[in-house]
Each structure stands twice: as C-alpha cells, then as structure tokens.
Length: 368
Image (tube, rainbow, N blue to C red; front, side):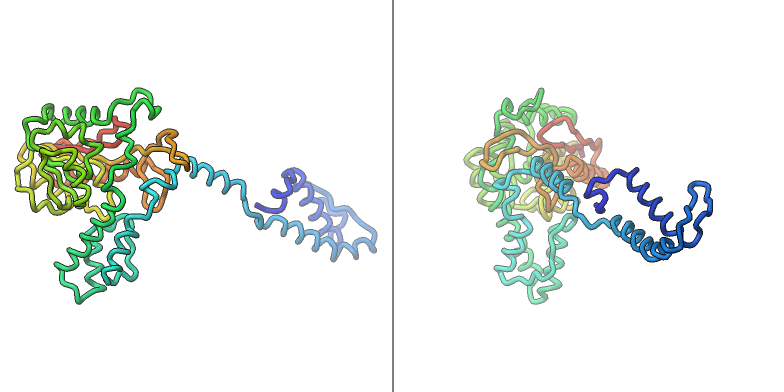
C-alpha cells in the first residue's frame, strides 16, 4: 500500500492536494491564466520566485507518497488464518514427511544418483525410472526397477501401511454431515448403476487394498477376493482382517500375478491419486484382467478429518490435497477424477461415469 493508504487519507483530500500542488507549480509561469477547470492565481514577484523551487519539491513529494512501499500485513494474516483453518492438522499422516521425499531419500541411501530429480504432479513411476537411468548408466534396467519399486514401497509402508486416521472408520454421527450414510452404501449404489448387485458370486480384484481396515465392511461380502498392494506390511494387516482373501504383492501398473480376463469386478479405492501413479498404464492392466462385461470402480478421496493441533476431531474438510499443499481442494479432486474418466474412454471402457454423490470420495466407473 502507499503512504496515503497507510495513513488513511481520504481520496477526496488527496485530489484536493493534487490540484493545489499543480496550481502552485504553474503559478510562476502562467499566473492569471484561466484553464476553465481552474484559474491559476497571480502572486507577487517575490512569492513567484520562491514557488519556482518550492512547488516542484512539493509536487515530487506528493508523487513519492503514491509509491506502494508498505506491506499489507493484515491481508496476509487473514489469508494465512483461512488456510490454517482449512488445512489438515500438523500431526496428520498427510503432513508427515512427504512421499516424494521418502522415495528420493531411500534412493539416495541406496547410492542412486538423484541429482536434480523432482517428483511433481505429472511425473509417474516410468518417468522416474527413465531419469534414474540417465543419471546412473551403470545400473541395469532390472536393478532400477527393483530400487525404484522398493523406494516407493518404503514410502507407502511408512505412511499408510499401519491402520490410523481414516475418516471411513469414524462414527458417521460425529462427522457432522447432514444425511450422511456409511461410506460403503455409496459404493454399492454405484455398483448397482454398473449392473453389479451381488458381489458374492463374482471374482473381485481390489488393487491398492492396503491394510483393509476401512474397506473390510464391504470386502467381507466378497466370496472370491484377490487383493494387491505394493506394501507387504500393509498386506499383513489385511490378512488379519480378510483371512479368506488371496493377497499378492504388486503394483497397479503391473498386475503380473493376475490372469487376463479373470476378474468380474476391479476396484481401486483411493489409490489412483497416489505419488508416481501411472493412471493410463494401470487402466491398461485393469482392462486386461477384466472379463468381458466386467465392471471397474476407481475412487478419489474427497473428505479428510479436521482436527485441532491436539488431535481432537472437530469436523471434516472436503476435497483432495494437492501436492505441496495442506488444504484439500474439491477442484483438484475433480481434476484427477475427470482425467481418469478421460483415460477410461480412450482405452475403450463403456458407459464411463463420474459419480459425486458420496461425501467420502468421488467414484469413477465403467464396464468392459
């Protein structure tokens, strides 16, 4: 802000000062001249002589005070307060060491040169491997696959394997969302739109099953369930919850343990927004493993728990957290969802739909 704004001088007073300084500036040269808007007064010779140097100084000083030299602290404070109110709390797993940092640190620990590499939105697992290869010509493709895969596994195990902080496990009465139902109710409604009303008699594949603590209430109804995750530790937790499931270590981009055309339903909940995730490659694999007429359902998070710094639950935040931010954004969640839907259409899935009814997550689904 400029000095006038800082002091709080009204605009009409500033305009008056401007007219006065201009009149004084012109007086020694055109005194008595009528400009219509104002008339330049005439002054005695001795005053005109003084105005020849005083008036320019006053005019320059008047202009200098227009220079915006003062910081707008109040605006920044208000913006910061709004951001803090809408951010996930500092002890949240979403604000602990970032997944990209864990991955790069693990690669560095394995003596891999990662100089200049940044894991930012749009960079997927294959991009990272190619960059690693350029910087580490001595490493074979197989070695790079192993090192990058292990680094990603380490990051997701560190942040997400152990069961903690999941809004799906909170009593819905505490969430304070009017008319809310249990999260799996919305999933079943969406499955019905795809023509799937009974999951007890079909082959179900859950990609990115994680520890299964949140999804157990739905997956318990699957008579034939296969779960895939990159974290062995997460699968150990899942085995306790789903003892009859077939659990396999693997990534969504490479379902090599799953036969082609073998599954009737492919689900992947809250996985496709993950760091380094290759959406298109994963959907290629989904298409491969699905039987003709099979259904696919992918979800993107759209709700986070709102807690104070002591960890006490105080409400919910809607949206998906963009990389580098602590504030969930509904627009960002929709952007990722629409990108998934676009790829589904490109790869030949039928009846692609983005389903936004659930307050917990956005569902994207189709049939083969």
